[in-house]
Every structure is written in C-alpha cells, then in structure tokens.
Length: 472
Ligand code: GDG
Image (cartoon, rainbow, N blue to C red; front, side, top):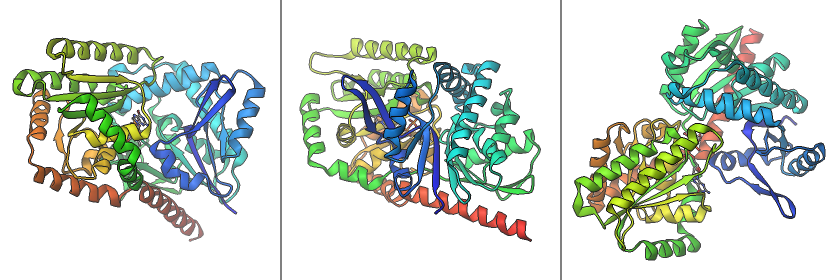
C-alpha cells in the first residue's frame, strides 16, 4: 500500500528534558493539525528534526522508538548542524532574504555547505523509508534542496513542495550567491506551492531569469518533466477555533481577563518575536495614537503577546531590547495607577488563553513588514462568534489577499496605522458584523482541510499528466 511521507525541518512534537526523563508534547500548530489527518494514518510517516540536541546514541534510539509509535521518524542534528544549517543558513541567510531584509542576510560558504549537507541527511532518511508509489510532501525554506536530491535518487517519485514564507522578487532573490542551486533544488519537485499568486509569480520570474526556463500557465518543463507551480493559500482549522472560542473554559478565562483589565477597549497582537512581524512599527503607531487622541488614554490597552523565538540569534536579541524599551517608554509616559497602556507578555500561552484573548479583543493589530500568510489574523476572525471586532491587517501579509474586509495598512505608514486604530475603535457594530461575517465565510470555506485536499489533488493531477506525457 503506497504511503505519504511528510518532511519538514521540525517534527510536530516538543521534547523536553524533565526530572523524570524526556517529556513529549505533541504540537498544536496549524500545520500539524492540518497534516494530522495524513501522517497519523496507516503507515504514513512524518520525517523531521525533533527540535533538541541529543548527545548520545542511546537517547537517539529512545526518541526514535518513542516517535515511531506516532508515525514520526527523527533526523538528529549535531550542535554544528543546528548552528550552521538551522540558525545560520536557514535563519540568517534565507529568512531575511525571503522577507525582504537582505541587509540582515549573511552570505557564508560554510553555512551554505552545512545547509547542503543537512538537506542530504534528510534525503538519506527519505530514501531509507520511501517505496515505489509513495507520495512525498516537503515543507519550507529549510529544505529547498531536498526535492532535487530525492529526484536524483528516486527519479519516479511523486514530490510536492510547499513554501510557508514569501518568495521574494527576482531583484532580491538574485542577491543570493547560491540562487541557481536553490532554484534547481526546488525544481526537483512535481508541484511547488506558495501562499499567494504574487509569490508564485516571483518564483517563476526567477526561474525564467536565473535558470532560463520558461513557463506556460504555471507549468515549467525541466528535463522532460513537467513541474506545476501554483498558489495554495493556507487556511486554519476553523471549526476547532470556533469551538475553542465557545468552550466554557475559554469563556471563564475571558471573564477573568476582563476583570483584570477593567472596562477598557482591547487591542491585541500575537506574534513570534521576529523582525518580519513589524512589532516596533506597531508600537510606534500605538504611541502616536495615544499622543494624537488624548481622549482614548485610559480607555484602550494594547495586549501584546510575543512568543520567544530564535533567541540565540543576535538580531533577535537586539529586537527584543528595542521592543522592551519602547514598551517601557509608552507605559512610563502614559500609564496611570489604574491603567496600563501596553500589557506585554514575552511567553507563550495555552490555546484556550489565546482564544480568550481573541474573544476579548476589540481590535487585532496584525502588522507584519512581510508574512507568508499569517494565521493569527485568521484565528482572530474564526474566534469572533458574536462577529464584533475589527482586524487591522498589513497588506504585506499573504492573508490580506483573502481577508478583504479587514482594515488594510502599510506597516511603514505609521500615520495610516494610527488612523486605522482610531477607525476600528469607533466603527459601528453593524459595520463590524458585516465585515467579520464576510471574512468568516471565506476562511470557513477555505480551511486547513481544504488546503491539504487541494494540494494533494493537484499533486496527483500533475503526476498523472506526466505519466501520460511519458507514454505518448
Ligand atoms: C510561518 C509563516 C505562515 C502564537 N502564539 C501562541 C501560539 N501561536 C500560534 C498562533 C499561530 C502560529 O503560532 C503563528 O503562525 P503565523 O502564521 O502567524 O506565523 P509564523 O510562525 O511566522 O509561521 C507565516 C505560517 O508559517 C503557515 O504557513 O502563515 O506567514 O511565517 O497559529 O496561534 N500558539 C499557542 N500559544 C501561544 O502563545 N498555543
């Protein structure tokens, strides 16, 4: 029976060293939920790094045995590989470049070589587990070389690839010294998916100008093999977010939050700590809003959840300091004994707390400089059971293409953000309801299960088309 193999940098599990040995916690992330319906079935499997450094073969064996029970197959990384492939090339070369922060990118051959070696390591694990007829679905920017590496070893295999972050314009992409190898790596896939039509267009333009291959209707012929390129905007598990928002535990938490916050309007932001998320700009806008609209002082608070991320990378430490300073300045300048302008949390919360935050928020400020999609925007909308609340959304987030009833802003336009914050706080309830219900209709229909189904269908479609081409 052919199986499906999912491959991503991280496995959908969190392993921590506790007093009683290793503790395993399955991930609740969007991707894990969506692909849960696949990898947990039959003999399907998810290949990836378990997210921690393991220093003994015995522990590796223990983790491997344990994860096999839940259809996961770990790829272990050495301390150098974590530093050079993951923190280095993935997060200090590709991540900034793909998010249009090329000035933050470092170009070092040693990091590139580690990236190549780790992609090869993933390839070995795929080759070990794959059998004829299997379908492979590879995820994200840490594994751009993997499709072609697998293609060389298993020429007949069916390979899908999905990029979760933006694909930059040719002018930015071409700054990478390894641009040719990266494109060739990706073109080993049969289907290459992006969140938006623009990402897809940028990719095709780079393919055209860097590896000189043309395309027709998103199809590129590579060595007599047809590669399909398409946009698949990722959705969320709508029913789950709506159900969590309606759960008694969530409502209890909302009541507790409300008591603690007092009778203020709530603006909410939730992100991983990352310079792509536009956090300083958002704080600048909130500060300017308080300055320009003194009548709102004491009447609105920003609840800002920052989830720690990549805190070993220098750039992220600097960003954290900048944010701490800005929050301190706003609270120092405007705070009162009975009112805190910015409630700032640098940690993560369980899902029902997140849901209570979504419920209580009159406004969600989702203002990234660049974002592949941004699922927080969709989760906020799905959690608004009474259809009250306003989404302020950056036009630089992939989600802006679908959530047309949000108030869209350019994150570099601080005045525009100030106006949007004000407009959302004074928006009539009927307009809030109209906008929210339109957005809910969209994301209810195009949910994560639909996303998985459509991607898999397109992959079988292109594979069948190739088979027909080769028998003609
Ligand atoms: C990448 C792309 C693309 C956040 N805080 C907590 C928590 N979260 C969850 C959110 C949401 C997820 O983390 C964040 O997803 P985003 O889409 O907003 O952003 P990235 O992490 O940068 O993801 C992005 C995504 O991939 C999918 O393709 O949309 O553009 O950058 O689901 O709810 N979850 C919990 N506690 C928290 O404190 N439980």
